[in-house]
Length: 437
Image 1 (cartoon, rainbow, N blue to C red):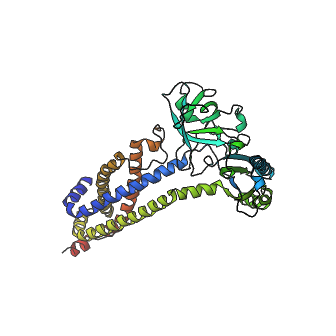
Image 2 (spheres, helix red, strand yellow):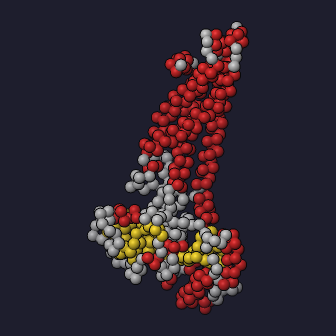
Image 3 (cartoon, rainbow, N blue to C red):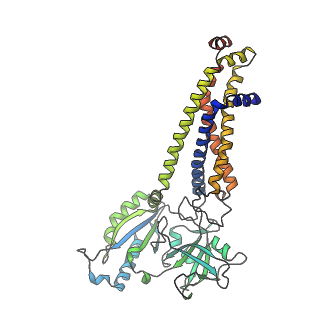
């Protein structure tokens, strides 16, 4: 049967050309959108060894100088630090607060800010690891607040697990340790920060105090390299850029914790020129940053376009096969007169549609290869050294996304051919032959 179908498709190549061109175009477009969604969904399934459930960012800021409640005497460095410590203590004392963290604006989870840096082992400039530098106040528990871990999430960590007596201490993520010290233990080793602005490396030497799991900057990225450095409150030039984060107890519903905190802490955090501007969950910040970076809009646009193109090919294929079924009534009648069954005729129409899709898909894959070679497909957080994640291995990714696209289009083709094929198969031999006279 397959041979005869191929012969029929070849004999009708002129009438099939338009449908084939549309199939190629739609296949390429569906693959492009499927590839994007595949990478996005794959990345979101990669474990992120940092947890933002039940975490909140407190926007504690200062009155501007022209504010009627501004107190000039309270703006001295000593007064600011003392008031900030009182604020931290008040946050600790609030019922339902499990952990507190203080970091700079470049270091909060789900933030659009980023501060990067490159490091290399002392005495070995041949190895270099670049990533995000995260600064936090070690007297508060940054790691416990966001549930950082080591050994792939099996062992939670706390700031207290590391020795911060050395002001140059640093904690690195696992991929950094593997890159800089592939054959030896990283803890206790010295690393130097690459400087583009200083003639020497004074103050840029750090000693590795510990190694923790890699984390993702955003949920749709793949894990990245991170460097965790301590900071002091006296180093904060502007307390507006320092972020206070808290983890609430999981036994308290988020809505109740938020309502109670706003009601009870608005007055407690009014200290000196400080006041609580607002409190927002990191889950909300995650949604906001995904929307702000255009990921939400891109996903919606691709889904809408995919639905549009699939409906387009469905209607086009259905119309083509409906017309073809009417034109081939005599052929159907003759085949039935020679003993063909309704099932074999129905199956032959379906196979014709799938054979057209197979030809169109093969041509489309040749075109798609040019997109891959030109680097026009999304990677969403790929590093040059990444090869252990599926989206970074181009051949398996290419085959998988094309297979998914082919499956999706096969369903559409079968649906569009089903009604014309069923109508043709239901004709009696005499009716089909008579209608063709």
